[in-house]
Length: 106
Image (tube, rainbow, N blue to C red; front, side):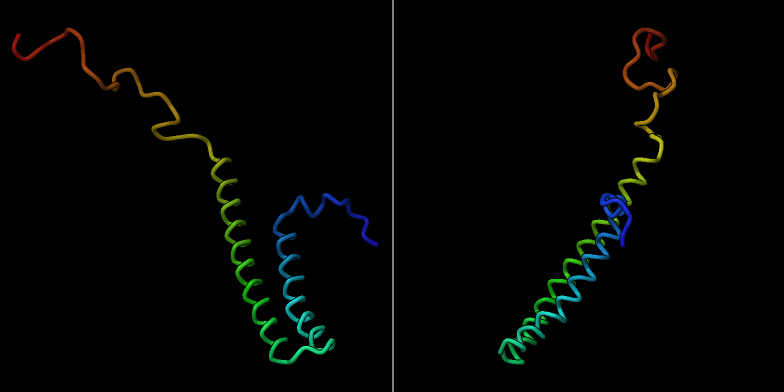
């Protein structure tokens, strides 16, 4: 009996995605078997299996891409702000025109 809380799978989306892919792969096997048992042709069942496998593969690729993007976003948020946008420039290095002071012609 599973004693884990229901939110445990939501805590780790990678496990949830892997579980979804496993069920989809299982359905790629189960659906053609059921179709043949209920009288469909082998060619029709094979076509269904190929179609389901293609959809499963596409979904798996999209899930992996989403996981990588989420990991990148999390890593980027955990880094401290630095560089040009992260801190103020020292007073002596500010750009723009200077008022008064020494001029070459005067």
